Image (cartoon, rainbow, N blue to C red; front, side):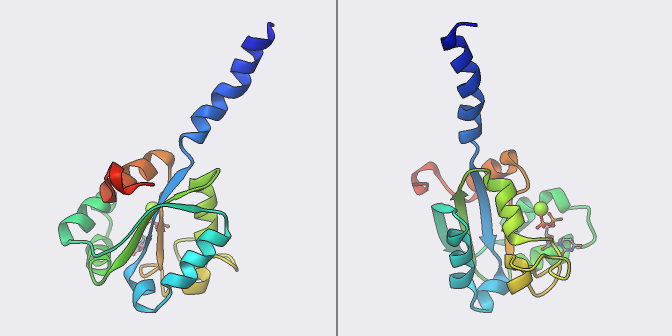
Length: 156
Ligand code: UDP
Ligand code: MG
């Protein structure tokens, strides 16, 4: 095989991979209310994530309903929308190699009682519902959720 063709096969997957090295997060109302913004951001940057976009904001009911639309049929949906609109949040787009999976590992299980030692939810979440932080579950959702909160001009 000619070396230039070989190199194409080596590098093409990496280029696709690099394009999806972002995830989306929210520091949720309980963590903001409990004064954990600084500590959580510190855990995030210490873990090697860089901040591409960030804002301190508060979700409207319509925004929270739309953001969690996928859970609309679940019994906790109403409570989730109420909680997510109960106070301000920090929304951010983060970048790192393997961002989605690494960020899910950093935040830990949905229920802090099941979250591993050293994770954000273990350290700061109150309960399975009020669990301190959101992390996208796929590259596709990371892109959708990032665009939900930020225009192209707000990403740096
Ligand atoms: N949630 C809840 N009760 C449940 C499951 C989830 O209140 O039994 C809330 C919780 O805030 C969670 C969010 O709904 O973070 C979204 O649920 P998901 O299963 O996507 O968990 P996550 O991806 O946030 O770990
Ligand atoms: Mg989820």
